[in-house]
Amino acid sequence: MATREQPTEKASGGPPGVPKSARLAFRALRNGSALGAHEVKFSRSVDRLVVDIAADYVFKLAFVTLFRYRLRAREVWNGALMLTAHAKTDNNGTAEYMSLDRDGSAFVVEGSGARRYSAPANARLATHWNPEQLAGPMINPQDGSILRYAVSARGRSKVRDAAGRVREADHYVLGGETPLELWYGADGIWMSLRASATDGSSITYLAE
Image (tube, rainbow, N blue to C red):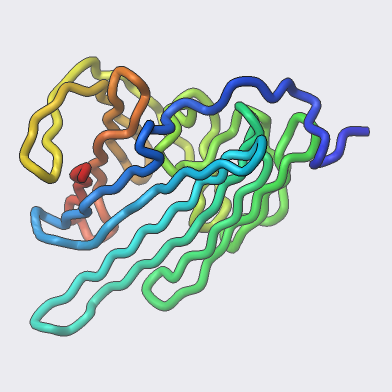
């Protein structure tokens, strides 16, 4: 019987999307104005890759805070296999969570938005740094629910970073209840994001 410490798949190589700098950092904008920051840090310990994710948004109007969001997540990988992932979110005062553990060739997932369930091995967290998420089921790191997207590749396009530099990237549109656009470099590195918030505003990420 497989255990969480003994995955049945071969743990070779590593996941795509890990930059040589071991860090991804984005400036988040709401309708073109500063909203917050999103950072992904990668570190290695023996045969493990640890991915720490932090997202912080604050929306104020006339010095009054109208919305605050804070997410902290950690993924642990052995080669190309994700072993565990856990996240906690303060969604404008509402506490949410997600927990994922490998069980043989599948994952056991639960969260504030989903009862305990089994997800297939090709499922990925929708934390966006890993382009493999586009090929399989996506798990919401905020609450553990399954995100249902229809992914469409739109070819090469140009994106601007926080310094104003324009670079080429592969553009993907994720159609669904909460549409999303993502851009990745030819090396699979996450470069940008655009999404619509629940209030209809536009959220854009600029890479730092």
